[in-house]
Length: 535
Ligand code: TNX
Image (cartoon, rainbow, N blue to C red; front, side):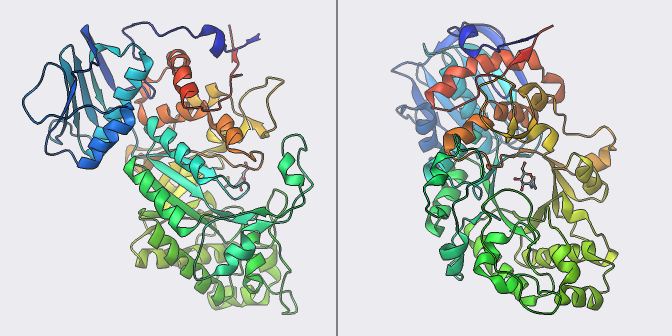
């Protein structure tokens, strides 16, 4: 029997209990007797190790400002300190709550920030401002805890990107993977190529899809837009203030129709050597045969120029170059691609793809950056085209790509569509809105264990972490995207942060129920039909 998960009916005012309400669940929580109450006389006492920006963040996170003091403890104080000896794990913190005050020690500034996020949750979970005395020792299981957002299929306003980043930070994710280009639209301003803004950022209206769900796409106007470089820089800064790295994705060699609409000369030639095309940004979803020509040096000139501007905007160590779902039919008949296969002594078109990726990687490496790609970047292996050890693979078609990457001593980020694709249905409720054709209920996302059993320890150390993806074909609005992402993001966050033995689904559901008013207060649209089978 399936019964409603009953967020609404089960939720009651949180009562004191000696089990934590935090998501993600901390590594260790030891409760003590007594309570602490945030009071008018509570003072903020920061050690000189604490950056000023963090003090500003305290005010933002707690929603009110605490008067600061530099003298010895007052009756009630929140004391902050960075000390990597006491707290040895990166991003880790210790939060000690006593009746007389709170001590927060971070390994680093990021640890302090995540400790503040925990304190904020504790205060929010207890509207009276009274929290149980306890000591929390905490640090993440994985260094990479990511969430992606596709802004090509549908464009989302800057205000939503900021809200999204805030929500990632609340649940201690530390990477925002921004999918900026695809067949349906190019969304980042590149000053050197204004055609990308004028042409590639827009598509004609489409008449396919679900009328009821996508009404604004029937108004006859072209659809699209892009983020200016100033907007991008502001978002990167906003994220950095919240200890989130933004990794941009520029898709190549496939998913390139929008770019080709602006640069038709970068598509393959027809078999007789005449130009390909014409091209237009796609007005429906799928995989398209028209991709960047791998035989034309101009393709690499343009893409490396684009990447140079992207590198200037994003300080991330990694730059994502896509690499997924690149059909080879055009390459098979394009005279220039075939000439490249011969001149580079490649066996076939899969090796040509590998040549493409490796050539781009060399450029990124020359600029001091590392490459990330979807798991197809491992295809077409040829000893002359080995990717750098530092290249990272996002394993999306299951976990095999990730396993293969780690065995070859590349880094892996696990993001299998079977468990962490948030464009798939999360409930079978009849009112569930249109989603991509897959079923990934909350329980399944939560059950995901990122370390493959088959790996030896020396291979598994290449596992950087986990990521959830939200492809937005069926999400024309921010509210719909949020609905698809929540509450599954909370399950993903716990998978990335909490040690395996501490993860427990019924306990997670109990804490999730307590989180509901917190999500409501932030106006998060989440799926309330997270149905759970009962025994
Ligand atoms: C596959 S996952 C894609 C996307 C689609 C998604 C739909 C990946 C690397 N590529 O282009 O949006 O499926 O679920």
